[in-house]
Length: 174
Image (cartoon, rainbow, N blue to C red; front, side, top):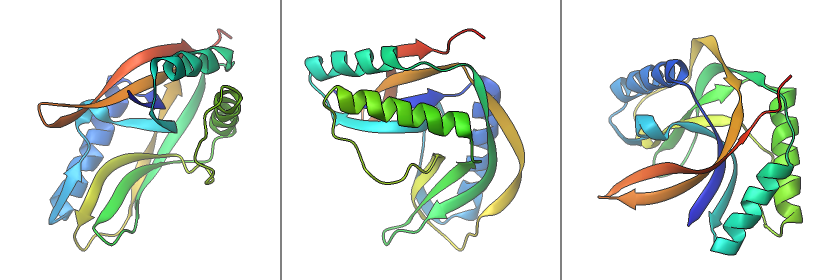
């Protein structure tokens, strides 16, 4: 299974992100846009995993401790690429999010995973290979309360990329 760990959003935030994506689509000539049901905030990507590695990932999630916290989505921007840009909704700096992501990567590394060593840059992908004369834009910030992190499976079903929850770790009650 191709796995990653993510924060998934409630329906209200998903609707706001889908609206931003619609604006992006309207400004672009072309692109591959994230399906509304797939919109998420990646904490770490694991790649292809065996059953044993999946169990290890679940154990790492179980070892992570965090209380509910909020994140703020406050801008739209892109990573420039030669074959079209990756457009995203940006998450403002959040100490609880960074602590959670660091704790998660430490636990996964302890379980034997080799993870991306680049600095974590929290963003929510809206579209890939997007082309057009577009500049990032300001938005009215909105928030999501993070109540859980989820181990997600990525697979193609009938030619469409689908993300499905494999495991969920809830925040500790306050």
